[in-house]
Amino acid sequence: MAVNEYRRVLEDANRLGERERARLIRELAARLVKSRKRPDLSKVEEAVAYVEGMRLAESRHSSGRLKTPEEFLAELNSWEG
Image (cartoon, rainbow, N blue to C red):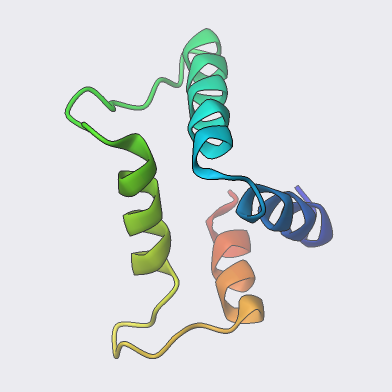
């Protein structure tokens, strides 16, 4: 996915309310199941809080300094194989 497309999707997702984000998570999980890339969320009681926690953790450097949007997106792009 291109950086600009990802940024647009992320911005749209951030504008969603909590219920809509939960719906989005469920839909994406269902699609991953269909593609046989199912994430193990069996021990996650509150998926929204879990995802928010992951997002917060990934938004900072190990020093605790907040990543810029460019740093965050560059790191994501480096993960794409």
